Amino acid sequence: MSALGRIRKDMRPATRIAPPSPSKIDTFVAELIEEVRAEEGATTKVPPHPQKYPKHDNPEKGSVFGGICNRTACNDFPALFYNKGTFGYYCVPCGRAINGRDPKPLCERVDHDLSHEEMNERYRSQWARSK
Image (cartoon, rainbow, N blue to C red):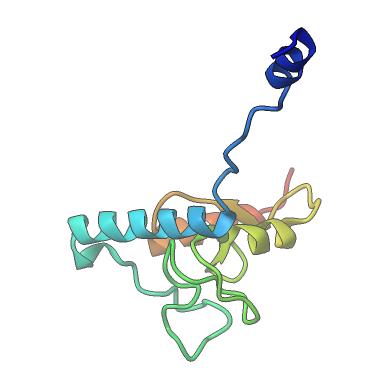
């Protein structure tokens, strides 16, 4: 092999492994959440907040951290964003879209099923007037 051939061979771009697709990551996170739920027992699921909006045919939709997104037109999971106005959980794209550029975001990322007390506190803090 000539010197030029060796240089060209050494200059070939390294093959990169593509990062996993968002759907694979979402599935992995959802499976992890389900494993944790199974380990903690069925008692860890908080029932939907009485004021949750909208009421879906599937009572789990938007009611479970890590479950299905609360937005009617969306069935993505895991629902990791909590909406302080609708008392529901939303997938990451919907949660970010709802927030937009609002200085006081309506949706916040959470890491567990919120109790009704936590939901109520977040609701009050969202609508409290600044003095």
